[in-house]
Every structure is written in structure tokens, then in C-alpha cells.
Image (cartoon, rainbow, N blue to C red; front, side, top):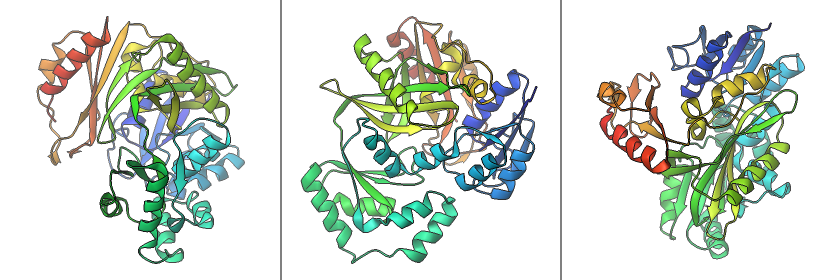
Length: 409
């Protein structure tokens, strides 16, 4: 049996993937630039190197039977080269390459008639040649390309174009970065004309696109998985609650009617048909007052909205991903409890991480705490999560909020 798994990325997702793989008897190696990364603390070996380092990626592939990722902002050219050499890489590098360019992702969804919010390219920030080149590069190389080769037009051109977009979409609308955007760091809400300058301060003026604001009533997410043989399994729809564009709370199952649950799952299945490779994918969605469901973003990996599956489902998303990429049969996606609520533990200060009141929280029945082992805490950094299982969303939600108030890190 081939039993060596390599993971590009050593954060909390890599940590939980590694723990699931170790439980099934795999040998696990991760690569990450941070010594003793969260994943590096629990697996067999960590190779030190950035996610985009081709030499370290190739070294990782050389000691792995199956190669996967915990983050999409990586060097996909190296992964494609490895596939040609016969290395099993999942999900497909072409899928990762598409998804890490958020504008290209939206274009792809639109082309395949998958409903999304209306979006528009910022012409003065764009060159199709540049985007084609940048999608294949590391973050460092992207910055070099931006500064070297593709100058903008006159300074006021972009502002004028955004004003024209505002006339089309109306206020508010959302300005987004095409690359390296996650946890709200690549988005800016434009409520009025004066917000444009603030958005440029936050995002810069390069490589942006605009998206019409969706007045949603709920944010939903679906975790879906495909194995090497093409078999697909899907988890219950969840509701996510965000603050500052960062996921704070996940409720499973989502408090929506059966018809909407089926509609969301059908949409996730449709998305999956247009993506290549095995593994877990997360499809984030907006539910509107009229009952429309729009795809917001796709993640080609295990995802924050699926953490509840560790305690609440027969097969966690992490075990499921390892099964999928290693040729093993998929497990059950059913919940083994009526309800679950996951709440993130986000940093609230800058300094050395120190967990307080853990014992008090663990005295609470049906409460599980996951601490990610990050040495430094800072505001809004994901330091861990809490999952509560029970008979109802209301019961779990109340207990999860109480547990989160107790934990300090």
C-alpha cells in the first residue's frame, strides 16, 4: 500500500488533514516556511520553504505517493510539471490555477451558466496578458510583474471607471482583488463615492474587479467531495455568519427549508462537474429574499465551513479528503447528531499565544475545543475553533457563544 502523503501548506487546515491521515496510518510530510508550523507539529516531517518554492515542492513530491494542498495561493506551474512526471496531485493544478484568480473563477462560473452576482473587470487595472501570466506565478513573482510591466493609465482613470460602475451596479458595490484574497483581506465595500480612495488604500490599484453587492438574507456553504473514480459525496448545507468578511459561526444543518437545501446541493453538484481532480471542495453561496441562490466563491480544499464535520458527521471533511486523494472509498457524509454549531477563536491582541480558561470550557458537555498551535496571536487571526453538538441549533448556538466568551488566547 502506498501510504505517503505530502501537503503543500502547514497551517491549521494542513494540521487537521495531517491528523486525519495519521489516524489512518499514513506517513505525512508538509512544507511551510514557518518552523514548527501548526501542521509541522503533528506530522512526521516538515520541509521548510514557501508555498511557491519549486525546489521544495519537488522535494516534497519525491517523498510522497499522493500530493495535495491546504491553500490555493501556490505555484501551480510546478504542480503541473509534477503531474506530467506521473505524480498524483489533487485537486488538479488547473483547477487550483483557475480558482486562485477570483476574477477568472467568476468568468468560468458565468460561462458555465452558474448563477453569481454581476461582476465587471476594472479595465484600467487589467491586462489579459498580465492576468494570464500572473495566474501561474507565485505571490512574489506576481508583485514583480505588477511593478515592472503593466503601467496604469492616468491616475484618475480608475476612479472614473468605478464611478461608471456605480452608475451601473448602484451603491453599495464590492471592489475585490483578483489574487491572494482571503478572510476579507482582498475585499472593500464601496458605499459611496468617498469610499473609493479608502478602498485603494486597502487594496492598491492593481489587479481589481468590481462586483454588485448582493442583499442576501443568509450565507450558505456546501462541502462536496469527489474521489479518484469520479464518485461524489455531499455534506448537509450549512449557514455561515461572517464579521469583517471572516467566518465567525457555522450552523449545521442550515436553518432553511428542504427545497432550498436541495437547491443549494444541486448547485454545488453542478459546480463540481466543471472542476477537475479529487478531494474536498467548498462552495460558498448567497441566499436572497426571493429564494435565489448565487455562488460567491469556491475553495479547492478543506474549508472553515466544514470544521463541524469532525464531531458532527460520521466522516470528517479531513478524513474524507485523505480518502479521496489516496484512492480509498468515500465515507458517509451524514450527521450523527441533530445539530452542530462551530465558532472560530480569533485573536484579539498582538503577542505570544497563551490559552486561558480551557478547563472551564471543557467542563461544558458536548463542547470540543481545537487549538491550532500558532505561536503568535494577532487580531482576527484564526487561532482555533469550538464545536458544540446537540439537539437543536438554538441550544448549540447559545452554548457555543458562552464557550467562546470564556476562551482567551
